[in-house]
Length: 110
Image (cartoon, rainbow, N blue to C red):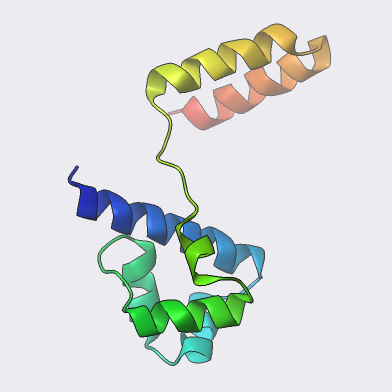
């Protein structure tokens, strides 16, 4: 994945998390920043990137500094995720292990 695509993808994921945490639909956010809902969808899916003006409007709507819209991390590698899961399981109580197992079975069921 090239750097531009990774930036668009990471930005879109963060924008979506912020929007959802503020209980806004794509349509409502689009209305607040004066763009079409399709544009919000394209940004959140990493297909496009907002202009500087739109970044400014996002920061005003979310009541945050523009630079905060770029405070995202790259996704951890699979090996890091596996190590983290191993650590979680090793430190989990019996009832938590039951829940972890049930959840894992649920999300991997075919």
